[in-house]
Image 1 (spheres, rainbow, N blue to C red):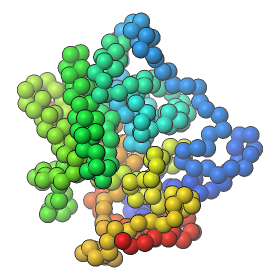
Image 2 (image 1 turned 45 degrees about the vertical axis):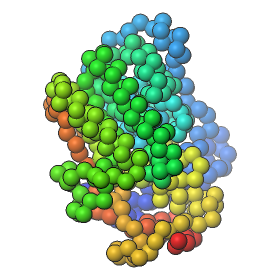
Image 3 (image 1 turned 90 degrees about the horizontal axis):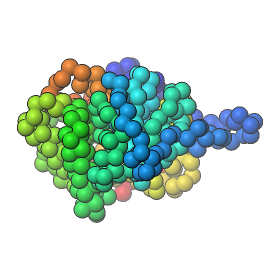
Image 4 (image 1 turned 60 degrees about the vertical axis):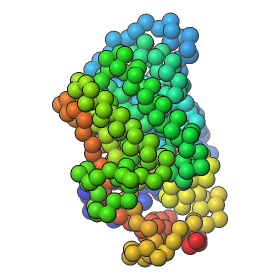
Length: 355
């Protein structure tokens, strides 16, 4: 399953997992083309089962196995990798996604990789009626809640959209879960809840905040909502997963990060430059107190992150109450280290500009 945190692989070896992004291959129809992580299947898989509102209303409630999971936002970058790990671990999953920042092709490819079907329902967590219809048809053991918008910079420009999407969606989900007595949830949080921590490395005992951007605030507020919910009803079991910086793609090259428009994260931006879609990488500052003056971040491979969600579900079986866990590696890499590692892994020069 690719790079695992805690191994001795160096950064170049980790980034070589992205080689399918740059190597040509033969398709099943023997046409030469270039593989990328998002557009290399010649034929789509059998469609995921997408149910209309009328079909949902007519459908008889299915009594679940213990292992049926609702995954909100499951067609996104982290969600799709997690869906694959869930299927491989034997879980049955229902994916709900509004497809604004995701692509149904990712779910087709997850089905192909796992050899198992996904139930996909197009819906929006900000519409409580969409959730209600799903819970009328399926009983779940737990929910993994990814559905959110997540660009820090963008959140400072459109804060109301972030508060509405991320908090209204979470409140709607929790209300419906409570109504149907489903009280196990894994929440996709972020290390941004720690604010500008002066303690390094950051661990779960560090104080939270102050958070300076609307995106981070939505994650912090959602955590507070979940802690208050547990305090009011100890039957709830809540796992808060605080991500650092997810990167990479599945080793098959079939699924990966495919941002809409200009990427907000470093690695997909570097890939866009390598592919010739962008002229150079913007490097913001070179006077930090780091090895080369550029910013340092903790990057975790997305497959490790996905495995962490499966581990979180297993933890829920122990009825842990409300627990928070950081998901990172504990080691940081600078912007220039990432750029130079990608150059070595791909044998291509990457232009960049310090601004």
